[in-house]
Image (cartoon, rainbow, N blue to C red):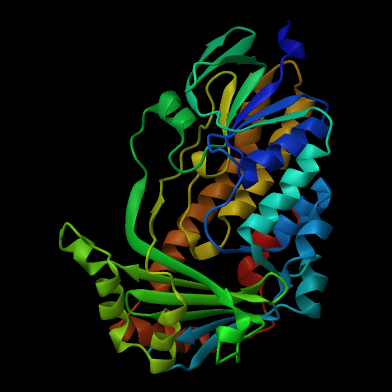
Length: 390
């Protein structure tokens, strides 16, 4: 089999991997998606999708399926967790749509993945495989070869590592160690909407911010469920304590917030936590016929709500470059990363800044509240670089 007839191999069947499979298959190249788990699934609850992501979903033909189970929130609201007083908000209605072409959408992660998965299954040229964890890969002049954990060997025209934060592909390519633990620890919970007694922000993306804590709440699945996320900046981790970030520390750090916010901890699942990581930006994601996408390339903290959005953007840019250089994936991958690097790096660094800003205490908290309280809620100029069509 010649290289031109070999498929492009994609390690990882998450949001970024499936989006890349769709975009590349529609560019005329066969694709094999290798998912390590026994099924295509997303862990966690809700996800926020800004207009830049909705443009990609529209191009991929899945926007209607995603919106069928989603919620278009009316505002994004920041509230002081200590006092319960609103600091600022962004209106997400008609003026927002006029500026960016799309609303702001919140959806269950699995609903987004299912829409992409269904479209992949209906698209010619996409081979979806589960229980296919990549162990290693090699390259020759005209192809890549991949070895899976079960011993199977596959050959491909090129390899895309869309295998997430702990990417096996990245580890082999760059051997750059583990991602950076931020000290932030996240607990999530999804509950029926009728369990939420206070729905004053029922159709908003609400963010309560306090010293070393924040809590996010927004509706998903047509408003039937409420997604709840509690995050702490672990002081136990900073002190070097071995068993940091347990539920006792969550309760300790939330003890000073408004009773209304404390009550929301009842909606959080105490049984599972996520340690939040990112990496410093790097300008090169590619070696020969192998490249990276999404969190494997540029993992970011969740504070800009852009991790999945960046992976979706990566997918279509990568497909465009593969279409321009169908016989030269090395050239396609260099052009792809050059097009994406500065934008994704800005998101990574912006997310770190926002993470510091929302967790401020003392006088810095007062300054933040005073400055943000003067903003025009209909103004989104701070987000133009991110949401506007390039």
